[in-house]
Length: 228
Ligand SMILES: C[S@@+](CC[C@H](N)C(=O)[O-])C[C@H]1O[C@@H](n2cnc3c(N)ncnc32)[C@H](O)[C@@H]1O
Image 1 (cartoon, rainbow, N blue to C red):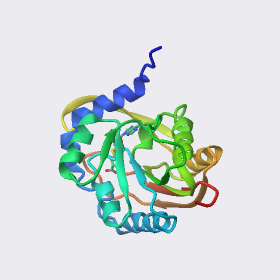
Image 2: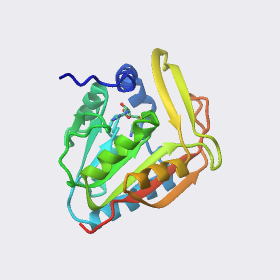
Image 3: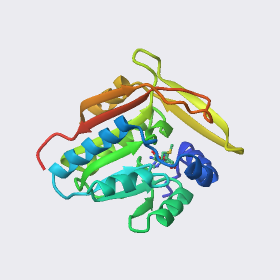
Image 4: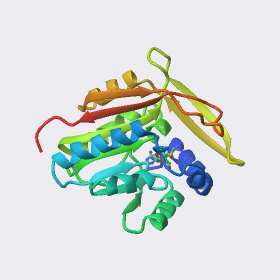
């Protein structure tokens, strides 16, 4: 029996395959050198290392900049991305690290093997009706005590969650959906998947002239209950 890839995954993959080279050139580091973002990644690394040597999966690793940063913090980490072109660019830029093509909605990983999951600006491309599946996959693959760090553009507290559709980027015609969610929405979905949010940060945006928008950045830390 065939298992057709959902339309949203095909559209997202095609959009990122199209813009992979330009995205990599224009977004040299997903953390944009913001000291608060770097501090959160460093805290995440410390929490993961405290649990032992199990690896972290960077879901939606894109060009692999942040994967490499986490690796430099002493965490065994590999990347997974929907876009084969992104994966090819990440492998070329970081030959010492592993990157695989795949979707966070269906992880080709055994149960209870990850020490952590990082997902920066990638859950924004998963629609509401598929996000519980992605969070269930994170729960399934994490060891007890495993840590999660999510980063995403957010509506402010009390705002409605919103969807935006982009048809052009870097001069390329694309079809790409973005889902802006509040930290409250994301924490509620994590909790429903059995993951315990233990910190949330909402910071003001920096200028993003090429995107023409200024949305707050949200970060949520969560853990899978239990002891490693
Ligand atoms: C905005 S980029 C962020 C890249 C990187 N995390 C960073 O912060 O620079 C989003 C990435 O998520 C990937 N992505 C989107 N949906 C995904 C999914 N369902 N599973 C895995 N990767 C996905 C895209 O292909 C793209 O490379």
